[in-house]
Amino acid sequence: MATTGMITAQGYGLLPINRSNRTCCKFRSTNRQSHGIKAMRVEKSLEELYNVRVERKVTPERLADLGVSRWSMWKTGKCKLPWDWQVDQLVYIEEGEVRVVPEGSERYMRFVAGDLVRYPKWFEADLFFNGPYQERYRFRAYGDDC
Image (spheres, rainbow, N blue to C red):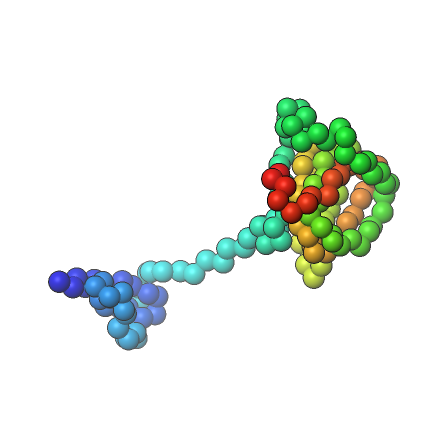
């Protein structure tokens, strides 16, 4: 047995819905004012859009489990670097901060000392360093689970 109901949509009045097969009838425009469904724009975070993972304030136990103290070290000062990742890379930021602006974007991600960041293969971005910066890094092989 099919049940029907009514929903309201601004500028269209009541819309009949057949709930048995999820089809809607044609819109019927009305002149009366009604309150109803409003569209909302939801933007994804850049981390989600570009598949960049970050763990904030990583514990010493987690760092020990990953063997971060044995990873390669890299340092820089104030500068801007265009960068692209040919492989997945794990980065633990020991000092400073970096702003990461993905290619073609005006928005940026900000990572600071204590963050563990995984950059995905083929990701391209400009890196902005505002002062002394130091990180430990490791390239990830296919199948690594971090």
